[in-house]
Image (cartoon, rainbow, N blue to C red; front, side, top):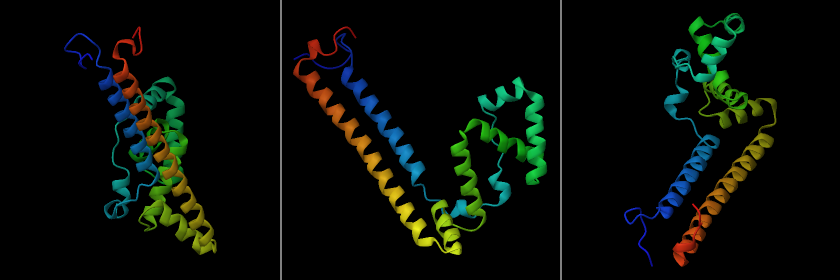
Length: 183
């Protein structure tokens, strides 16, 4: 059996499989962290000025501002009037909207709103507001179902990634000379 690694002129295929596996796990970990990210006590105690910390302008927002400055200016001014924000705050919020897909932007805004109302995280805020309307149990049930489904999906992706890694590792170890010929 040939030793693995690039030192003998061969490709380091198992190392690349490890990299693929690790990047897949990082993506799943980030997704799982996004889905069930409880807000810390420090983040719930943020003041409104800390919520609008100056964010660097990303490429999408910069392109929008350069491509259509009149529309960019119109939206910023409208945001300033509607939400009673300073120009910097309005620009930061609009840039954030442009950089993030609207779904994630809406989630961020909802988190900020619940933090301002004094809830420790978005889920607690949803439950608290629903209890005021008399539908707390229904919302608790929906959130629990969402969390369970999200965990099942995350663990399924991990299982497939790990299973694929071990399958390809076994196939490579069985016949390293003919593993993915031509690559």
